[in-house]
Length: 248
Image (cartoon, rainbow, N blue to C red; front, side, top):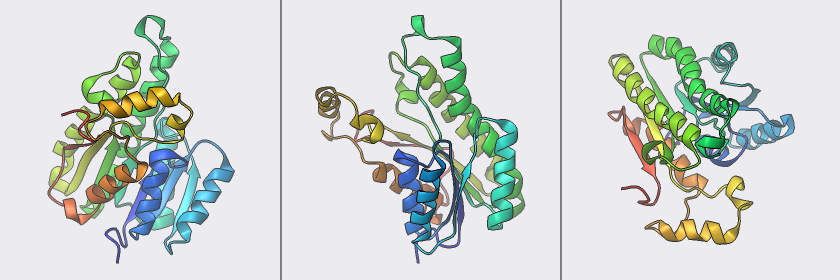
């Protein structure tokens, strides 16, 4: 029996990196997994097969959660296919880094829409089902950048900071219905995105972290298992940093 046996989870942006690690860890812990992806259908199908091998129900949806109607459609489809929704994980996110002086309006709007508006869209769509069930766990993936800011990432930091305020507000509003809402703030996590960067630069980042290493996607996924499971039944409105003491 896994920690998430019998629960149904929806994870946005699960085709790679942290989202993929969360989906796999959730399947290993016995959850039925619905997930979204935007890139290749092939990758989505591949992940669906990989998850199903754990003996759970898995289904991928090509969907853009930053579109209000699409998010509503997605949640309705998941509830009808899986018979309910217990855990919602908002992981979909992008970066469009640039110094503020050079940042375009488009780069600002796009990051705010994909990273922050998508959280509003999916949580609003999932609320009805969770309120009916008088149970639910919502986990929003933010970032240490949303807590401390970062030069060249004003749009990304604003979107991730917005997620923190949104998470705390949702926890206050839905607590009486036994719906919990928490955020996970990863630090420097080594994924496909960081693998293409200059090794010297990356090593410099590692050296600046008290634990002297970057985090693994699995380590973020483990925090999400804890917050989605009944082990965290009295934890809501919190931001859990998974950052090797980078930000203390």
